[in-house]
Image (tube, rainbow, N blue to C red; front, side, top):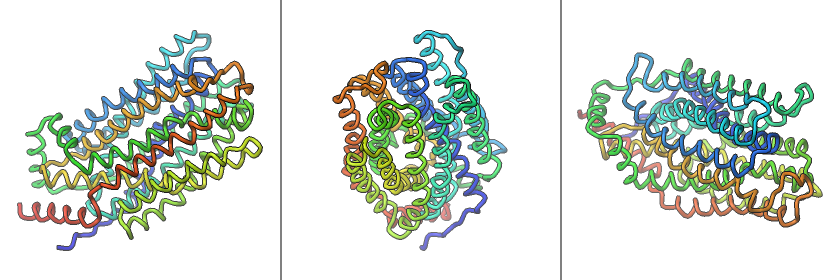
Length: 467
């Protein structure tokens, strides 16, 4: 049998892609603002800020599988995923704004407690929004290549949210705000409203894929026989799921370990402590990175259609390793703008790794359904998120301590020691390089090629037709 090719409408792809702008704002904005605001502006220890970011991701990792499992089983007149996306995106926007509306004049401990409380509320709401959004993307199409094209829309539009995030801190420094505190309050409120708006765009523009009622009934009956923990065990036994999750987690953890360090490298290593110039360079670098990621997205879609997802994902890991090694030579205080070259090089591996991983999770869900008879995109997507978010929690916890270990002293400003600056640069370049290399070693054994994915899909279609 030749697998039936299916195409999603432009409106559906666009609506799903717009939702990713909201997801990216929710994921990236706390990381971009927390250290500059709570550490540099308010004086809270960077180690404690990193610990709170870690705690938030642990909380996130606990709630993700529960929400994913819940959304797999819920059926409403509006669909399985839409009610979660609608409510979650609105609450996430409101709670994000609340993180930055702290009272003035608090002690360090009081600021820390406020940050913990608002962050936990925000990440709970973000889970309710993002986990069903990802699950919706896994189930909108059954076609191997159409899944890649759908995720291509998300990857093409999502960087718009990341570009916005890159400029949030520079916006707080503008002259029309009396100080950074007033700036972050209104900037955070605006970002929260955008987060909610783009989440709602998915709700109103995407029609969840209709399913064969008889097939859906069989899948639901199979799911009802399995507990939440049975689904978790099945995911742990899925070889392609474990390999894909481990490879992606390695990359995201390695990058996140030094993500917040970029602002410090630009500010103190390249610009001698000038926070305004360092913040602007960080924003410029991120803007170039994400613009190039958008430009590479259609290229990656075409390449993966031609050569398969596994081959292009592997090539992206190799590229990422070489790029991060070359970054050492691009960080030059005599020519700070040279660091922006890394942004151009970053486009390919970012577009491929972050787009194709989600397209491959959909293939993994097909493989699981063939073996178990159960369809559980929400649970698999949430467990996938749980693993790398647990890794992120550890990364965030360690990231704050990296600054402490290398000897960064906020009170010294631009007069940091030469050893501090050297190890700051070495960490920023070396940790991601090792992460890409480790991911490559893991991913080479990923078993689902195009031929395997289409064979699985054929067997599922034949089973449904026979039933």
